[in-house]
Amino acid sequence: MISASGVRSIWLRHDLATREKHLRRLEEHVAKSGGVLTEAQKLALEKARTQRQQDIDTVDTAHPGYLLGQDTFYVGTIKGVGRICMQSAIDIYSNIAFSKLYTTKMPVTSADLLNDRVLPFFEKHSVPVLRALTDRGTEYYGNPETHHYELFLQMNDIEHTVTKTKSPQTNGICERFHQTVLNEFFRVAFRKKMYEGLEEIQKDLDTYIEHYNNRRTNQGTKCQGRTPMQTFQDSLELARGKCWTQLYTTTQSVKFDAD
Image 1 (cartoon, one colour):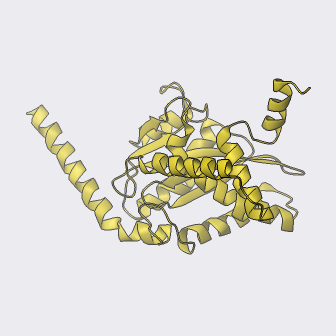
Image 2 (cartoon, one colour; image 1 turned 180 degrees about the horizontal axis):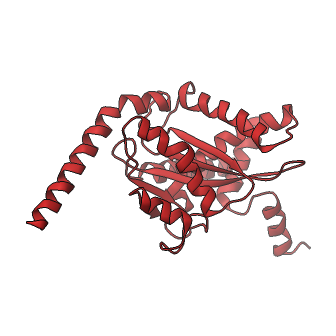
């Protein structure tokens, strides 16, 4: 007999601790092997896909910059490089993505991605980032007075929203992006090339992210077959108009209170 804890330890070792991960792995296996699913498996997969789409679509976003999803993805441990974590941020409206690799996950690395990649991009297009959605991981969530990530958001007037407890699917667009990067970049790159440093991997990742944003079509709710960059550019006037309207309303409200 095999104990329940023994089975779970194997699941954890292979990153299969939840039903959602079981179904994702089943999809990948069938796609690669050409196997045949049972009726029960088909029903389970269809239900999971529907639920994922509903969870993603229920996230409220009005325009580019309105809501930024951010999450951490553990890539793995590479010989000669060490432990690798990927910080990713995605504009929920347009699906524009930003990613950077680190050897650890800490509040300062979470803030570094925003400071180095995300905010300069939005500033270049004169669109402010209004809100950030993250899970309750220690790299994002803590005492607002001392936590580096929380402090960075406050300094840049970005509202912080966290997902519900035990509901990581609330930030499902980031999870879906991580699965795409894993399948289309990491699994391919690590089979073809032996990397000697983090900078080398980052360089190739940057090339993939450029492809993802500018040339790979996206079937997201707002993209509808356009690339994320096309969606972002087509919505710039919408974003700028709503941001100026919000700024004007806030200014008038402050003026009225002062009077």
